[in-house]
Length: 311
Image 1: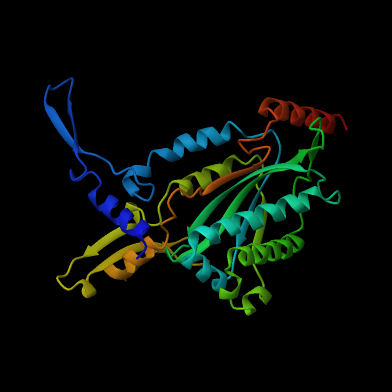
Image 2: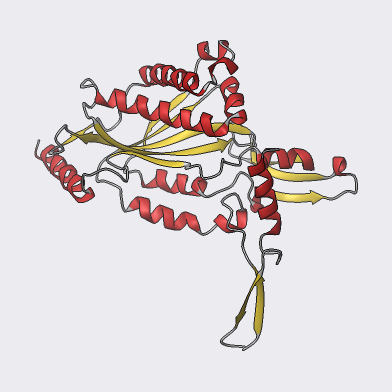
């Protein structure tokens, strides 16, 4: 077990138990003194992440432009997933780099948008409906970009950003390059590069609904308390079970899924991120290092919208 996973287990099992110290406070109404165990603050802890989603959502909604948005999801086949699970830091960095470069490359083409300065951000999600390992990236993409000298907004079509098939091909080629650079390429079965890869691009209107959807995942851990419905304790750990509520593929209905304790811990720990890893990344004019003021971009989009209305 990697050291980072051991640290997470130690933190979440001690959270608010008093093992990390306590906070004593007095009630102004009753005058009694109360003691509460300190939180661990670990980002993989269910208890410590619950209140952060609202703050993140409000911050992202403030950055929304008055334009149409797209949700683009990049996935990789099982053979590539296994390599990423063995080398999470290098694998996830390669996934971010290859997918963002592919998006920026196609957006530059005059056949699509013709902008060297698009704006989008990506969120890494590592689990599927049954809490098994399934790394993929969700990108929220503004429908357009700035021209070369940042004096005009170049909108995309409302229901089309870039073509799916060329984007998949380009993404796959760039991921191969990144894996070679990281020394991971030879660990992937060659047949994985030849199979059909899945990419989804969906127009999502003004983007607000998509932000609310992603906000639930940015600070959520793989297993939340409300999904655990039953714990069957047994002196023999091999016979102890935890029951989770999961959605089966192709349905929205939750069903119980009993897991052995060891399997439950395994599924939880395989989603622990490397220390200091950024699971949300911004690109183009949304990058924090971009020198173009956000108010200027907002103004340029408004002007472009007025011109469309006049036409």
